[in-house]
Length: 113
Length: 114
Image 1 (spheres, rainbow over the protein chains, first blue to last red):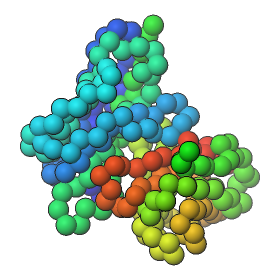
Image 2: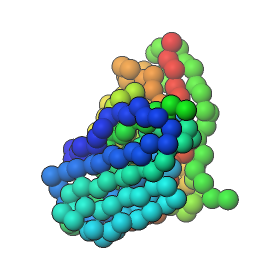
Image 3: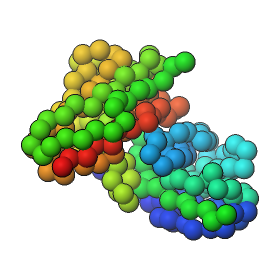
């Protein structure tokens, strides 16, 4: 099936550093979503994006819907230990046969105090 | 509060036994999904259902079965035909298949087969 290319696969950062991750595809999406999964739990929605170029913030998190509608970015500023987890992007394809959400493989974030 | 509940949180079974994982939601969502998660593999879709009494295979349906007799419930059975059943299983639901609000996930069931 369709795939999203999410990078990086993993990150090891120092507390206080900023983090950037992204998802790209060869297909056009009309919705981009970013989820966070804490260890041993289910993913929780962080940010939803619905328009090309849209920039949305949720506290220290900022996400953008790419102008081409084929990519999205998530930034975390001033990371803290509780930011540890796996971050997933997800997209809804544009067009008549939209189908299910398509998920990236995730970015595993580790934060050193 | 509305939500989606998976039970049990941890499940141990002997090889060759069938096991059923429970998923219940009180969000009045039409669509429900089952995903399997292995380290480094992301979320892989097993089965999904857009409406009661109807369901479709996902990318890795072999060795699994589901039923959707009630809107609120979407149990997953891991059969003895599943070659590598040990994994973390996630259930999700959405208002409808193409909901712009994304999916709501349960907290997962970790299945270990020994």
